[in-house]
Image (cartoon, rainbow, N blue to C red):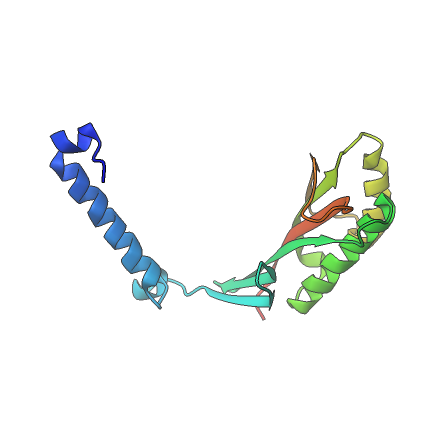
Length: 167
């Protein structure tokens, strides 16, 4: 193992780094959240639709609040942009419902469009507005142009965060 020159001149630096690593590993391996050990609020996580690569949704509960993190949803590869946007949002809403949420709970939506061009904005807006508009209120939205998505032929991916009172 190569020891940096600065650590040779300061042996306490190696000890400090080892102590920090040991503390981190002890905390990470702890079955009880640190907040619960200290008497703070307990945070519970529920993984919905897990697969070998990702989880469709993660519900985090604590302090009377339920936050739902939704993995990126897509449409059918090979179809046009409008169809993929509509399908991706419909899939997002299905996953949100499976996690116990509703479109009114959405607070943040991030959209990735392959090879984004300015004319795609109108297609995206017209496709998603009927699906997630909530009495004139919209969640925070970010649209990001990307070079590619995980599967060839996909043109859009939508992920989101929703927040609601815990039931």
